Image (cartoon, rainbow, N blue to C red; front, side):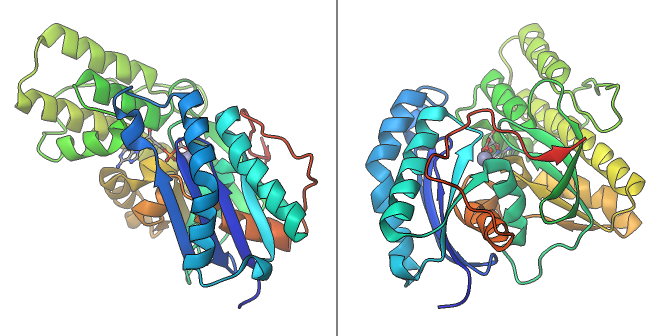
Length: 338
Ligand code: KG4
Ligand code: ZN
C-alpha cells in the first residue's frame, strides 16, 4: 500500500461516513450512510435520533470503507475524525469509534475541523489547487470567505452576518413547499423558472467580504404571503430569482476578494458548492479575469469522510497528533487569522 493511508471518520450531522484516502488525494473508498430519508418527515435533523442512528451505523460503515479500499486496519497510517463543529451527540459517536481504533491499533489520532475537511475535498484529485487561493465555504451552517497562503495558513476575510447560504436555501425550500434538504430541490425547481421574474433585495454589508441572507429570505417569505397560493410557474420563478440573488452575491464578493488578494485560484467548498447555478455564476465572474475555479464533484461537496481523511493527511504530514482526551467541540471554529 502507498504511503500515507488515512482512515477518515465523519459523523457531525446526519451522514455516517468513513473513507480511506491514499496520499491525501486518492480516494480508495468513500462510504456514506445518509439519514436524509429518516429526517424527511420531520423536515430537519432530530439530534437525539441522529445520534442513535450513528451508533447503529458507525462500525459497519467503517468496516465497509476499509474492505472496499482493499486495505486492512493494520495498514492504516492514521485515523482522522471530525471533532467539530456539529451536533455534540453525533460527533461523539464518530470520535469514540476513532479513539477506540487508535488506541486498539496503536495508530495516531488526528482531530479534523469539519470545515477544513470541506475545503480539502478540493485536494482529492491528481491536479490539486495551487496556493495562494481564495476559498468560499458554503454549507448548511457556514458561509466563510477564506484566504489560504498555504496548507494550514488561513485568514478569514468575511462571513455571513446572519443565515448561512445553505440555511437560506433550506428555509426558502420550505416556504415554497419543498421538502428537506432544500438546496438540491430549489436548484431543480429553479431550472424551469425565470431568474429575473421576482425582484429581490441585494444586502449591503459593512465588511467588503461579508454576506447577509436573512433580508433576502424574508423578502421571499413576504412574497409568498402577499401572493397567496403560488402557481407552479410562480414557484419556479421565485426559486430561480432567489438562487440568482444568492449566487450573484457569493460570486461578486468572491471575485472582489480574489482581485484584492491577487490570487490566480478560487475554490468552492461545502454542500452549496454542489449547486450548478453557483458554479456558473462563479465562472462568469472569474473567467474574464483568468482566475482558475476549482470545486469538488457533488458527492464530495456534501458531507463525506474522504474530505476528512484528506485534511487529516496534511495535518498528519505536518506532525499533528491528538491525545485520547480529544473532545467533541460543537462550535469549533477554523484556526484562522483575521
Ligand atoms: O456541507 P453540507 O453537506 O453540511 C454542512 O456541513 O452543513 O451542506 C448542507 C447544505 C444544506 O443546507 C443543503 O440544502 C445545501 O448544503 N445543498 C445545496 C445543494 N446541495 C446541498 N444547496 C444548493 N444547491 C444544491 N445543489
Ligand atoms: Zn458539512
